[in-house]
Length: 163
Image 1 (cartoon, rainbow, N blue to C red):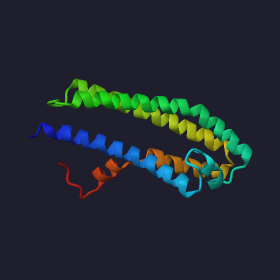
Image 2 (cartoon, one colour):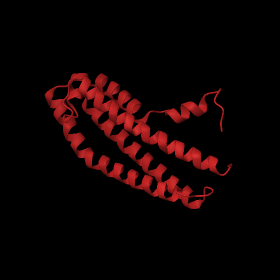
Image 3 (cartoon, one colour):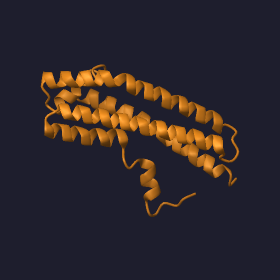
Image 4 (spheres, rainbow, N blue to C red):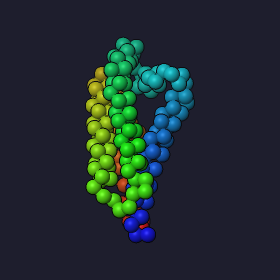
């Protein structure tokens, strides 16, 4: 039973990460719809929320389209690594070198993705008027990076009992 604790914790962490990704996607979609944007116009809300001119929004659309392939490639890589990890975890006994390696590879991919997102957000923010850019960057960091995340909040809570 004791050997299952690390595996159960790992499974819970992966489940929380999957749920968080789904919630972020759902929340972004709800925000776009609530702000009157057509679900296929990913940036209309940005123009309204940050009161951008057509020229400013056009520059951001160009940046967004240039970033999209990088984002999609990272998502594919992370999904593939998640699949690899799930395959290694099936029937796994104690956590061994193969699982540790897959976890490290997954962490590296996620960190690389976050770096790319931050660079993109900073690039977009620089095309905006200064105040709107600062507000945009703060909001994007909060929504997409969620630092500290829910797992860290739970683990850091002083009354939390660890398994």
